[in-house]
Amino acid sequence: MTATVATAPGGTTGAALSVLPAVLRGALGWADAHRSGFVLPADVLEPHTEVNRTLKPLGELAQLCTTIRRSTAPGTPEHGTAGDLIMFAWDQVHAGDLLLELLRGEPFAAYPYEIYAAFAGHGLRSEGFERLAGTLSSTRGWAHTEQQANRELGLINSERRVGAAPHAEAGEVLARTWLGGLSEPWMFEGPSGYALTHTVFHITDWCCVPERMPADIDAYLRAWLPPWIDGCLESRQWDLTGELLAVAAALPGPPPTDLLDAAWPALATAQAPGGAVPETGPTVSPARTPHGDDPPQTVGPDDAGPEPDPYPFLACYHSTLVTAFAAALSLERLTTHRADTAATGAAV
Image (cartoon, rainbow, N blue to C red; front, side):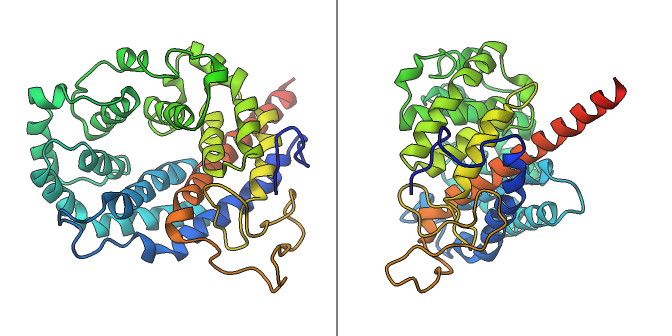
C-alpha cells in the first residue's frame, strides 16, 4: 500500500493528534514486549560479536527512550515505559561496567562513548568510565580521529552530555555536513537523508534543544521537508519517514502543523496491529484507519488474521523505535502549540 502526503486521507487540522497517541502507545508497547531482542549475548565483548546486532540496538533503545521520556508527561504510561526501558538497557551494560571494558579494549572507538552518553542524558553515570574517557578524550588521536562530519557532531554532542570539553567547534563541523551546506534539495536521497536527520539530532541533543538549530537551516528544512517526506512515503521508506518527522518536530518556533497533519495518518497505515513498523517495503496490514477508530484490517493471502510478529526483529526494531520517538516529539509539540494558541485566543 502506497500513501503519500499529497493523497493521504485525514490531512486536515488535528489529523496528527487523532493518530499519534495510538501510534506512540503501539510502537513503545512493541519495544517493551520485545525486550528479549535487545538482550546482550554472553560473548558481547568477544571480537567476533557483531556490534550492529547487539550493542547498536541496545544503545538506540536507550537513546530514543531518553527523548521519549523527556517528551512525555510524568505519570503517563508512555513516560513510565520509556523510563523502564532505559533502566533495562542500563542493567544490560552492567551500570556502565561493560562499556568501560569496551573502552579499554577499543580506546580508539567512539561507539562505547556514544552509547554511554545516551545513559548520561538520563542522569545515569559511571565514575570509572568517565575517568578513562576523560583521559582518552584529551589525546591527540581522539581530537584528530577521521570521520564523517555528521558522525563527528554525534561525538561532540556525546562529549557535551558526559561533561567533557568538545574536541572541535560544532559550528565549524556543521558547515561541512550535507545539511549545513544547504545542499540542492533535489540531491536528497537515502544516504543524504539519514545524514541530515542525524545532523539535526546531534545539534539539537536528540531534538530536545531545538533552539540550537541555526535560522538558515530551520528555513531550509521547513521548505523542503514536505516534498522529501512525500517521496519517502510514496516509496515506502517508513524508517526514513519517521526520522524526517522527528526532524520536523524538532524545528524551533511553531511546529509545521500542516505537514504533521498530512504525514502522520499516512505513516500510521504502516504500523502493524502489534505496534511494529517495517523499515521499508510493503506492510503486512494497517494498524488502524487514519483516525484510529475502526478495527484493523487484515491483508493477506488467506485472510486468516494478522500475525503477532509479522517482521523479523532486526527488520523492524529501529523503524519502530524511530516511530515512537517521532510520535512522542510530535505529540508534545502539537499539544503544547494547541494549548498556547488557545491561551492566546482567550487572552485576546
